[in-house]
Length: 296
Length: 184
Image (cartoon, rainbow over all chains, first blue to last red; front, side, top):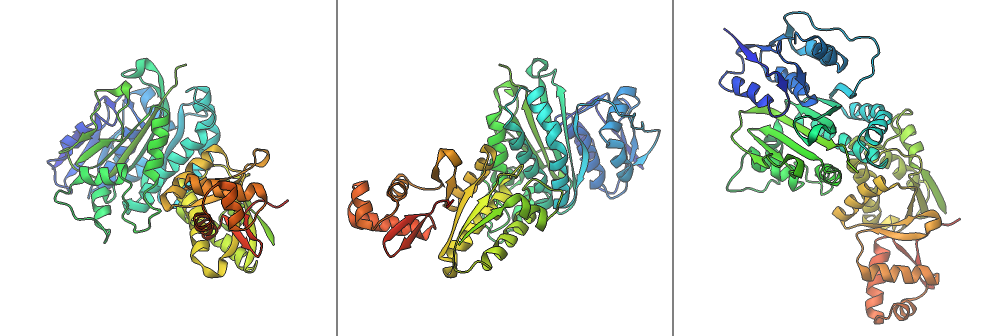
């Protein structure tokens, strides 16, 4: 039996939970087809999470690409189809990449498997990041290097803790639902690896606690700088990301297993929840950094 | 002996000629290994200038592998008790990463800011900073002179200066204590 998984018309970190709600009752080896035919927009998180979803299934899932021309064209420019064709069985025709067109894709969907991939991402993104962060988001020029640093640390999280490859994508867009249509730059880093709880459990030095679950593991790693490595120098990456995000009034959210936390909820997203538990289970870790345009 | 290490050159030589950013832990470890090899050839007494001028981004993992572990290994190694470092060419974003890792390990370093002078950077308490600055300003001297300059008892000054020496921020000579500083 094959189950059709419906992708919402607008796919971001929040609406991706609707996809996971549909997956939750299914055994991992159940054949599924992910149906994105009516999806008209997807954030970098949405696209990388769709790739991660395919990685998490025992059987290669099927995929119906979007039928909306502009959306398909954008997904092609973001390299979504290039990677999706490796993890999904396609039903229907995917759009091809149109020739050289101006795009707000800051970094196309890029696989992260080894540390050389992080280097390549950082080397590639710098010039365009400078243009977008200072030219479009009105951030200070010094933000570029800190942005790069945050991106590097987020990607390294996959290599150090996931136990398998993941994906990164960076994009700018106008956020109509929040921030009165201000521009944002969004970094999404998703993997289908072991997740924070299992990663921390692998540490022989782990402090035993009365309560232990995905949310606590997330808080330990993201907020308290706890790492599975005994080296005292480990676990500084998230502190650095949080400082960068806090400085630019941004948001850092991390989902792992059945929990999701937001490191500090910004004023512009006051209905956001700092900690969610009991979400539908999903392997690995999915991280999103959002930096809004600065208004003088 | 004064040795100058351009980190960008070390990165290109030891990891990849196309890279300009110090990111990821394996890269940091490779760069530090190359620096340690150079230090091994210098002998037991050396001042090394670590130059960040041509480095693009520096992330926390690399800052930890290069700066923190280099300082920690020098402090821990008795054969390197006369090996000192001066750091220069850092941007504000480099300093963000370096400050975080120094504080994590309780370390400090000598930071050459060019025309803005030389100062200590990292985890250093006000008394230690003041003692180091007194040694730097007077060009060096014995503990009793530094104690008088700072206005503290000699025993207290001696303890502060020894701690700074242990942290490779001061050198001890026959005449007393001398601040680690860039040599032109």
